[in-house]
Amino acid sequence: MPRKIVIVGANAAGTDAAAAARKTDRKSDITMVTNDCRGAYSRCALPFVLGGHIPSFEDLLVYPTRYYEMMKYDVRLETEATIIDKESKSINIADSKGKEETLQYDSLVLATGSEPFVPPIKGMDKDRVLPLHTIEEGIEIDRMIKERAKSAVVLGAGVLGLEAAVALVERGVKTTVVEMLPYVLPRMLDKEMADHVQSSLESKGMRIIVGHPVDELLGDDDVRKVSAAGEEIPVDFVINACGVRPNSRLAQKSGIAVGKTGAICTNPRAETSVRGIYAAGDCAETVHLITHDPVVPALGTVAVRQGKIAGINAAGGYGICPGALLSAVTRLFNFEVGVTGLNEFFARRSGFDTVVGRISSKTRADYYPGALPIRVKLVVETESKRIVGGQIVGGEEVTQRINALSIAIQNQMTVHEFAKADTCYAPPLNETWEPMVLAAEMAIRRL
Image (tube, rainbow, N blue to C red; front, side, top):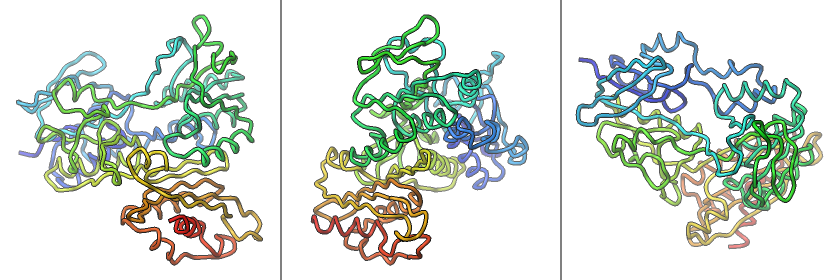
């Protein structure tokens, strides 16, 4: 009998789990169950459709329908998994028409993703207040912009919040971002790096309020004003970008262990507390490669890696997912931001004694036309001299520098070793002295 594999969730982690399972066991029966009305699509790209960089939301679909047919997946759209019976190794599902069914499984993968966090702010239930988490929500926001919406407030200055705010400004909407913490991108950056990002965004016409929570959303049925920082800001709509929370309800209801993070506990093989049941993506914990604490990265890169490992193991193979550094990048207008490992604040909170190396440089030879500013910050643990984090903000080439720093951290390179890196140079591409090497030398001086 072929192995029966059921995957709950059909986005980043779920589709990669299915692909890995199919490659591992080509004869297995693979069933995918999803609440969505369509197959996998890129949630990360929603702001870039809003901003007009991608023509259509339909362009975000990862695979055409024929892909699922070719891979011989049984895809159940608009279907909810309601309960797991661990003893009989079965899962109950119900479709949008109310039809219920019980599926038997040999292996089960939970890739239920995350849900927008709704902060306890009075008025959050008003009309024209919505997150940007699904294509449907993106279409609705796009509709409001086309109806000549003139002003909006974005709640939260994380990556999604700032990307959404950039899209609104690009579409001609007067946009205010309100962040309760003291600076933008608080999960990624330290304050002095975040201040450069904020200055760049404000120079493009975005208004940013930091260090103040939203007090209330005002209006009758529709939101009309946002009360924050002692003023009432007129709005045509509000985007809730206050982050996401793991969707682990099915696991909790079925007696599968959930950690303090709210996500499903997993081991390095992506297996949960129940043998034969795996979890991957935003609903699952992994470990931070430096602190070894459980974390929920909520990053597409981590989701697909976890999904791949879960799929391999669910199909009878063997794979390990060692953890994550929470490496992330984004582009805001013409300004790039990247981070890997621990920033100075989180390193200190985790008990590390650190020094930092900072440098401001250019992305090309200073005399070459188009050279853009770039700022690099390295966080170094004083006892071992290992690099434990890096932040880069600037005009270009941030992604590959963050990738290089990630590799250095994963291989436990010391700052002395990194400072000797044999880097390359050409006037239109880089300075003679690579900015990351200069930042490493600054850290060595402080050591």
